[in-house]
Image (cartoon, rainbow, N blue to C red; front, side, top):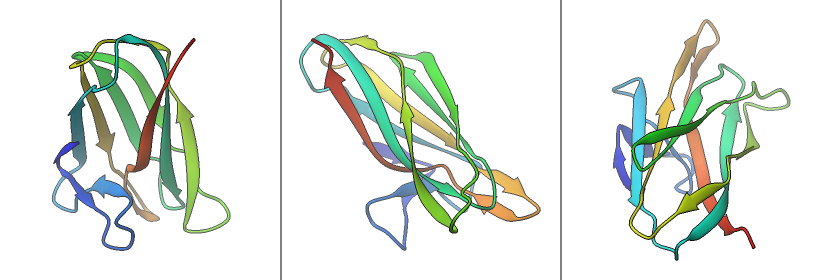
Length: 121
């Protein structure tokens, strides 16, 4: 994915997060699998200092907005978002837009671990 405003987390190279210089980040890629109907799963990281948001855009249309839960047991914990079922064709633009949440507790980043598309039979 091409990153804009997102950076690779210095504590874990498997995560991307909104960079320190802005309040949002974008990750964009062209869908590379075959044409079909897909379910989407986004594995992310929740923090205990805020509730950032993540938007899923497909082909230039907003498909879903996810609000991260507040992590309770540690400073970061995994969270999974299930997106809508999508009809996709090869080459369709997939974009994730993450927004920071700045609170009196600190700054929570919209951290993303991975995105999985599963073909719906």
